Length: 121
Image (cartoon, rainbow, N blue to C red; front, side, top):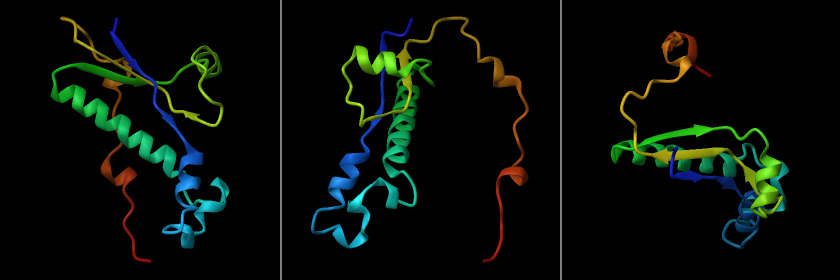
């Protein structure tokens, strides 16, 4: 029932074009996406999604991120260029009374020892 559904897309080509400009060309990242050590277009878009989720929470709204089962259908319906990376969807709305947490909310979380690695290299 959310009145807003945002569809975040990442644009890999925008990063390649930016890093091919004279002030960034020395990085070598302007030649194509295959030379990047990590897909920063995806990482930056994911951080923007998290910021949106946190902002909605700050405003007392309900928000959630979810995967889109048939992204090609959405892309075609909205005429989204195929070079854009479809990240997912964010639903934003007013929380309803009696709303429940998701089914996975009661699952045990991994301990910090299981997910944080300390070492000297």
